[in-house]
Length: 234
Image (cartoon, rainbow, N blue to C red):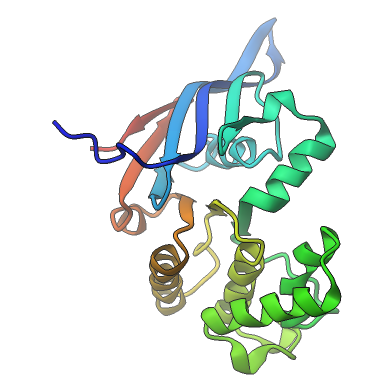
């Protein structure tokens, strides 16, 4: 059988990742148990599982926001375990984008300023940062809302700003944690349409953590996290 990923670049991988949180009666509380995962260029991957099963913990480890107790995570073949905290931040800024259920936009700034922020943090010029932010807002359909603050935007529009902010650095992979959990059905459907559009136009891989099985069914592949173990969902 031909391997559909043959010749494709692996942009994000986890090998035997385990995560413990404290002890009960001298026994470690195991959240993740030997999780392995490969995300290839252009993949749209869902990770499903019940509430509290460790999906968000896994996503944070994949994005370098948390460290595994054991195991290894690589982004574009670069291991987080070999990097300093500063190095991890640099890789994260360069190669990983994040979208959360709650947009986490800075309320005192405009949509344009929010999207430009990651570029300014890596010391791009203001002119370049705003030009790239403007183009990304246009891509997500918000060219007419650049000067508006988050409080002046709908929930769906705020989530689109968050997507633009996550993508403006040109990451290899976008990580989304329950991104439609705070949206109505229409906005949630629009969000997923946009994800597939972005995937096709920009080639960014996407990993979505969700408990919504209908949403997960639309992805290229779906993994299930159960009792700390990850497996392909049949």
